[in-house]
Amino acid sequence: MMKYFILSLMIISTTYAQTNDAGGPHNYIEQKFDVLEYRPIITIEDHKSKFIRGEVTINIEWKNISDDNFFYFHNEDLTIDSILYDGVRIIAFEVIEQDPYNQYYSIQSTSSSKEATIKIFYHGTMTSEGGSNDWGGVHYSQGILYAMGVGFFNDYVSCTRHWMPSFDLPSDKAHYTGTFIVPDSLMTISNGKLLSKVDTLVGMSKYTWTLGDDVAATYLLTFAVGNFAEVDIPSEGKPPVKLYMYNNQNSIASGKLVFKLVPEMISAFEQFFGYDYPFETMGYYAASKGAMEHQTLVTMSQSQIVGKANANDTMYSTAAHELGHQWFGNLVTPYDFRDAWLNEGFAVFTEYVWIESKLGKEKYREELMKLRSTYINTTAAAEQHIPLYDFHRFSKNNYPPTIYQKGGLILALIRDIVGDEVFRTKMNKYLTTYENANTNTEQLTEIFADVLPQKFWDTWVYGRGYPEVDITTFQDDDNGYVVVVQRENEFQTYEFELNYHLMFDNENKNQTHKITKAIDTLVFPRSTYFKGVEVIDNLYLYKVMSNNRLTSVEEEFDSSINLISTVIDDELEINFGKAANYTIEIVTLVGKKVLIESGEYYGTININLSSLVAGTYFVYIRSYDYNTMKKIIVR
Image (cartoon, rainbow, N blue to C red; front, side):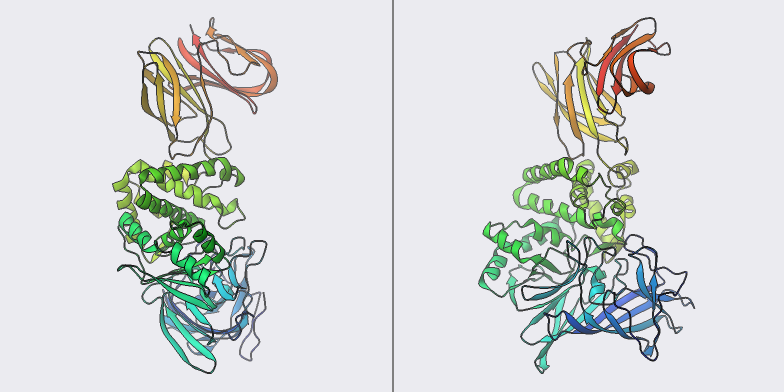
């Protein structure tokens, strides 16, 4: 990072200590100020060089008048020339905390006014986050200079600080009007609508864009400079949809094809969530990287656009995903990035809302089950079964696939559990309650508190992993039994539902089995031969490791372990053919645990069962390598 300016009235210090704290990308702290508006004016004489001269006017409001009011801003690699607080030059201090992401600059209030205007003058070469996946920050490629609002692997996530000094955390949403002075052979685009274009400058043009009455988090701001072709998509009374494509026929034709259904996407989301598109405009622009859901102006990958056009893919799920963000992430924004799943999970869910709207409920379900398979069989283990909330403790990636895939699946699961009407009503309440503001997972749980227990959120949002289960079925003279055993893991015991076809000689019956314990048994009366179960996968996250049927009480799963199935004289004899650490659990037919022992066993051991009443039980024996279950009868 370049160190700051030296002017006659300015001092920069890296040792200034204070008790206030700006917070960070993963630790929201309520501030004493509220940013009302950002008004940058940026001059770019040569967009290939990425060099700018800029000033940004930041209007703020203090929540209370105090001598220890501090305003904080973030800056990455730009040189500050001067700072004015209500027109008076002031001192700024660099604050470096122990955590690498928690570095910022501090300005102390110099007046007793409740509102203040801060002007920061700066210059420099705009940079990006760097690294092997150089995503966030400012890029120049293929003739386009453009800004990406977040980074994938940086410590600070929000990247608007690479082109505009700002309080660059998502918790303080503000109005925005950006002015860009560029060579008159180029076009500048930014968030919102074009307020004015002035061509009277010698060799330069001045573009001013504004979000108007809307507010945005800083990471959702963007700009791009290049030789764009502007394309209008017919929107039939919806907000105008504009494309800014590379100025060649292939790019223009590709954009017209793959984005032509965006107005239908808007209608689908409005109808499903009962909330109109929240902003005045909607646009997409082509660049070398993408996609990124900047508010009203989404950055899209040029190569992806052309690839989708070549495949004649007008469903374009990525366009739907980024459009969905305009409600989830942009209209309603998390306080910090611990809740990034609220953005990405909902955006993924809107992809499937779009599929359902266009292709029907059956296709919606089919595609969700494919996503479920990807998450369970690939993503979860690759990412160490990270939770949805506060995942960054386990992941160096600011946007790991888990928060997309599992997030979307859990929202679809909630829809299944509470029903369509209730789900849509709750989602509308979520949007209307927190529109143009911030939210977190806890507030979403409160919306659903009367229809979903806290245990659900603890398991599937705050918790890690998913259950791996072994299913055993058998029958006696009167009943059929389905025993579900959750394999031990380092995370938790899960509550979930399994759906079965109960298979009999002459028919199949559908049955739902609510699993609440590590060993859970479904008991049902039977009149014909019970052949076992076929599991019908639902949207709960689980993996069936085995599905076995006992044909007699003598059947065993592991030949190295032998036990006598009928217990007489209160002694259960078990013979272990392999030395290992084993856990032995004895449970009733309905899953109540009545005995547990563990240790390193080899050879024959005897377990006293004198405390058990006569009846039928399951013995479940497990080690790191083996899982065995057998039915016993205590006489």
